[in-house]
Image (tube, rainbow, N blue to C red; front, side):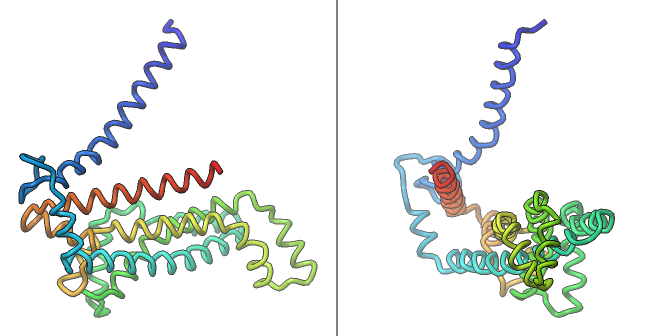
Length: 259
């Protein structure tokens, strides 16, 4: 039989290979973003920050970034409120009814993005929401709802159902019980769902391509257009900034948990 140490080496090696497979492609964009050429490629003569300067001086790139940020925040807020209300409502239902409702809600995660986007397009045309910020917000909110609800469900798993009953028996109304007992218990899930909803909205591209034309441009759409028209190294600069921002947020979160 293979000794335990051999199993450990095998699985550790596999884990490091998977990690390298996931991380190394992200690191490739860093030298590409510093290229001194006008096309995607490694630097030829020297490192250059011209593509970062181009990003911060180009009004179209900045407008697309700001659009993604404010749409993501609105979507995250709407999804957090609606997803939390849905999860708390299901928590008060019977296990059978709650399970059926949750399966219906997670349908957007199971359906391919192209199918979802086609449905949004057909429905949004009838409502006159094509190429509008409201149309993008509504579509992204529907896509983000399952992530918020799942996070809140997970946070409410350990909440004893007798606690809300005790609050009600002591004279608290339904709203007082929800706001004073259930919502505080669900707070970690609400915050996590808010972050997930923002990421879903900020990163979504397929639906945006279906329901927007010219007036609404998000950062993923701008990147897509840059790849389609002319492979601009500014895309690598944007990707590098997003990777560095993600690493910074992850590091801050890890430090706060350890402190």
